[in-house]
Structure formats: C-alpha cells, structure tokens
Length: 170
Image (cartoon, rainbow, N blue to C red; front, side, top):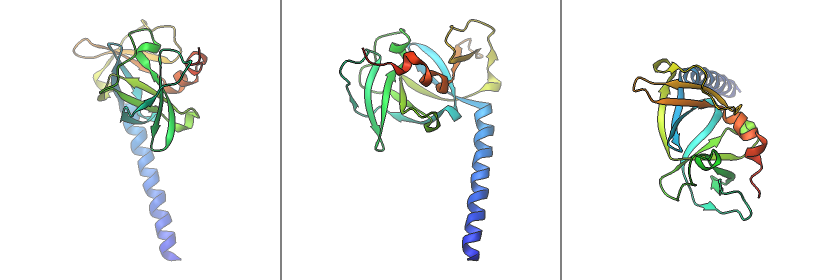
C-alpha cells in the first residue's frame, strides 16, 4: 500500500511541475509559423501538437479553404488551410506543409494547415506594434522583431469557435 501512496505522490508532484513549466514557457514563448506569406504566433497552451500533414481525405461540397479530414493517431481532424481561409493565397498543394492541432479542451477537432513551423519565439525579443490589427477577434496582437518582420498573434480558441470557421460546407 505504501508503494501506491508513493507513486501517487510522485505523479502528483510531476503533474504540478509540468503545469508550472508549461505556464512559464507559454508566457515567455510562442510558436511561430508562416502561412500566406505572413508570420504568425500562437500560444503553446492553444495547440496540442504540430505534425507533418498526413494524407488528407477530401470532403465533397466543402469550401476551397477546407483542405480535408486528417487522421492523427486515430482521431479525425477537420483541416483548414489558413492562407486560403484568410484569402491570402490558394490552398497549399500536398507536400511539406504542417498542421497545428487545436487543443482538445476547445471541443473541436480542428487543425490549421500552414506552410512552415518556425519554432519558438521569445516574447521578450519582440516589440508590440500598436494598432494595425484586422477586425478579426481571434487576432490578439501584433509584434515586430529585430529584423523588422511583423508577427501576428492569434487565439486558436477564438478562431476555431468563429461561425465562419465552423461553416466549411458550401
């Protein structure tokens, strides 16, 4: 019985440490990615995973920006081509694209197909850019880096819950 108590204590401590590390890292860093020729940021707490685009199953009678359905470890995700959704370009051809899986807590098995994942970007290295946001409520803030490149931070939670995003049928 003592061994079980020790294992429970260990699991509890480990879970607390992971939560603390995730909260600290999430506040200091964002995942950078490119889509539609623009640079984007998303909080690490907003996504579940970044994966290479698996085979997508096309969906009939869907809008052009709805890339299809992807099976990732047995779960089905509706995959939206972000650049096409925003009108920044044509849907990406199959290839080296990545998909960002929305966190399961949002209750929507949605994924964004993007051109590239660019790794973590430290918020301390970015300068806030006042104004200049589109009217979309899922765009949180705009930043620029030392090289003068602009980054737009998004809320995956807000994006995947917008009616336009959820209405992929023609």
